[in-house]
Length: 273
Image (cartoon, rainbow, N blue to C red):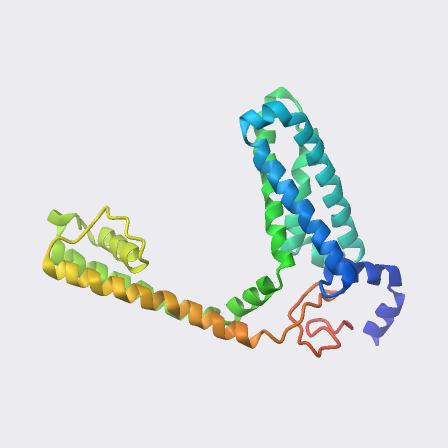
């Protein structure tokens, strides 16, 4: 009953605004996402160009104007997201809410910290603008599916990492006994480092086994490395297949996703979708 009452009390224009800003399945939502995506990419490009001294000297003024333009646009977007959400705190303190704030805050801080003695501080703070690139993830539906899949497979991944950790300790210790300090394996931690580098197929080459037995063991670790890489991929792939049936609806009340395709209400707070 409370959910129904809150649905009626909430203005229709705010519901429509939430649909445009947060939903990606409507024509208006797609248009909004595409426009915002363009602004984000352009703003990140401006940040990158601003860090090039030669470009900054010639076009610094125009880059500054562009920065303020993007900041105003993202500020309006940030405010609209807060307005269109029933519980503003859910969005403000969410991951993307914090990222959105970090995308606009540095430019305003540069006004407060104006002055020659603060130029270095301002430049460091303004580097936080690159956080805007993290906002790109909200436009990719697969990113939400991947997050859910990783959460659901976290225990399997933890067990997998425990096995890998045990394996590199054993292999590193064996290599220390086989090769010894004279061949660069001066201690067990250094030998474990070599085992990790070899198992992950990175192969820096700073340490290498010299004996036949050591090279045989290294070959075994290299082959095992290829098999190990496939394990977490398989675990996450299976979980992603299970969450493919989830839709992209964002609850207007709690701002959470991950609902079933046929869901009419939010499974977290009961709000009507």
